[in-house]
Length: 344
Ligand code: ADP
Ligand code: MG
Image 1 (cartoon, rainbow, N blue to C red):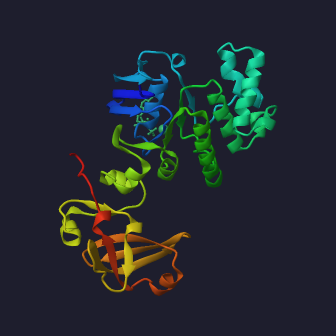
Image 2: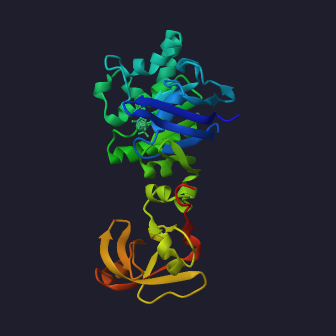
Image 3: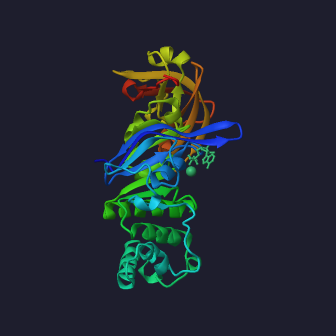
């Protein structure tokens, strides 16, 4: 059985002006041991789905199964899940070790075993020598790791993580991403990870569900979402994308309807490039931006469309091409992705 199965999961909240549908008929299956992410903008329903799975909210309709067992009506403590929140929610007056051991105490585990298991969980997040400190004596990254140790010490089958790295600065966040992945692999438990950060989701996940207005817009591997976005929303939200609108698609790419192509799939040359499955369009360079790993250029195509081209660092070319220059933008037919228009 899947670790999680959601069927027609729906949650409405009553508001001043009628009801808000926070989660709208979500169907989803997550496999045991999967690192699964829910990605979407603020307000798209991600936290509500987690709270429904954890049992902090009751669904308006639909069902939740954990490992084949219907838990829809069960209390949070009757579900084999645990949650890590963005603000960590550590007890400030307790030592790090006691914080980690707390869930075991609540479950009636004896003192000796409690301390052993908590110490082991702390070692798992490389904080064994911080056991006697108070949370206030730790850095943000260390507090985050304590929260992880506390959530995993009770050995839940599923760990729910709601933007757990949101409070950390960029450098620390990237470090913690790697650690999170390692911890998940070591423990072999199912992670359901909520984030609004597309890069974070792409880096960490086995699969991602992209949420939009309470619904799953697309479900797939990071590569699927990046290379084969199914809608304009996903193409826009996951990475940067060039949109060939329906009006200009015909003349530019020889196909009807909306299409998209990633900036790194476009290349520049002084002459049009010819060949099998290769297309070119002339334009003018509007902007050249150095982005460290490459150079991003904004080009206004003569066909009346603005595109972004990302080229890896190439010193000779970067000095050659600048604002106002005439260029040819080329791409391979196979890199162009058809989008499903909204509302179909
Ligand atoms: P996300 O986590 O993706 O930012 P949320 O699940 O927190 O989104 O919220 C989804 C929608 O549901 C939002 O419009 C939010 O305002 C609304 N919402 C969430 N919780 C409540 C609540 N307890 N009462 C009323 N509306 C809520
Ligand atoms: Mg949220």
